[in-house]
Length: 351
Image (cartoon, rainbow, N blue to C red; front, side, top):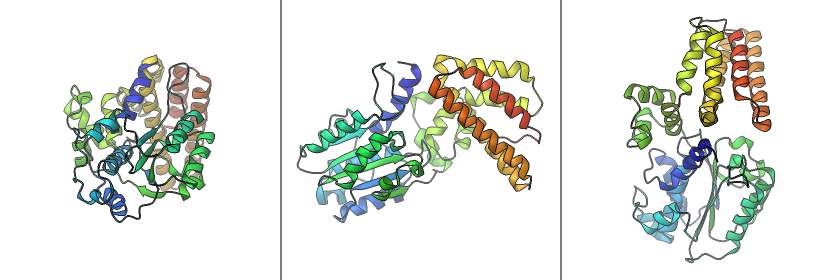
């Protein structure tokens, strides 16, 4: 079990322990209004950028549905179910009899699987075969639906096609276009917008992980986050942004690639740097995408096409690296060399 796996699992569980819902008031009201009317749909697809609060919203609503049965939902507190409420505590411990969280589990090697396995879906099937322990609603959260393999997706589809009575599904998705069209068609879609910088700041308030982060670095991370508290947290606590700034120095002609590229590759190749590696690759892809858009706007179709090809090449290499567990240092140094060859225009920072 790696440290990176622990961080991933912690982020998956965090929404279950998060009492605050920052932003997304319109989406919340749309869902709760449907339930208060007694005509709620059985499946909801909550989409948006990673870290924007999709799972936090799903947990927030799920707690309300289980803590305030029937018409009592109309009188539910605006702030949600308080942390000392039995339903909050049971759900946080994954011990509520009418709640099921479908997520990636650990394989025989004790590491988190890359995808949700079909046996996870079978566990859901067993849950749905039982009657409600309280005689009220049952709630299923799928987080994230993008991580289902084909078998798991087909198993979930069967449940969505013939849902048990008084059972409600909330599917969290970063990229709903990648889901089976038949799954999307059976859900009401709730797309979430990015938060304002003020809301991101509020969402991050009091997090222990940020206690040692300099205010200027946190401010920069929030500005770069695109309205996503999760992304701001990653940026503020990762060494990837600093390493990318070093790479940008080289791209702007202010550093020596034969020195800096190997240093970056070595820093990101460490076993404990898996999350930093992923964020660095994302920042590199963002830089390339920004350059591609700039070339297209300038009418340089040939350059835009070359940048698009490099982006596609990077994704292919990354997929091979993950599938075959290849050397991350070699990937980083190779891609930085390729990106350096495309850096023929004035420096452009994060887009």
